[in-house]
Image (cartoon, rainbow, N blue to C red; front, top):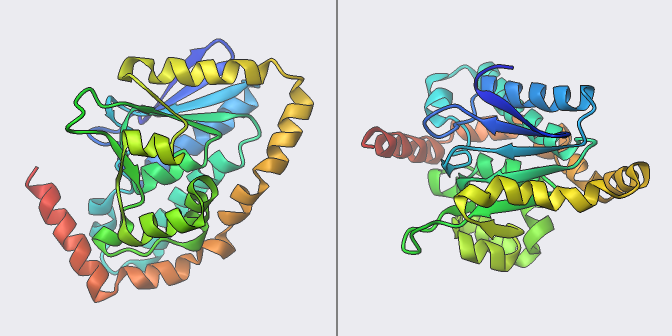
Length: 259
């Protein structure tokens, strides 16, 4: 397994830890490594998967500096977005349960990946004045959210609240995320992965085949939402080059460069 995704086994539950410092930005290589890790877990007949990140950050979303470096290469840009949504589909369609251990901030693509999981345990910030946040903040940098990704948000917080969050690009503080159902549980940083494992334990004691069959039916809408025909990546790539989008992305790069 590539070092960008670390494998840690907890009995028959496999933890896949995103490990691309400093913020687990999702470039095509990391997305492909995550897909490979999920496939390997199934091939090795693991019972479930936990996807985790680094302390303080689950994933900062797609690697915008990398995407901007592609310039006018629409084919490469399409492939990069396709790799990301391929990772999201792999999580959504995984035939065994998968829990997101959200070890800190989870904007944009990090939020999307977490919403593809069965259950979300998020770290509670040790400093209430500086909470960890989660959300799809794409509009704040000039990007539209594809309908398939919007469905993930609507599915967990309801249509009206999802509209407000998506249109404004809001980042939701950890305690509020729990209140509205964007995450299922909060824990201290040290307990995020143990709590994810604990949630899986009673599920895995159920008769396996009926549980997995029922789960697949209940999650079929997730897989449909992330079907390429619902993502309209060609349209999304066209929008990437819109002047407003490019201005927002350049402003984001400038902010990143000051850190």
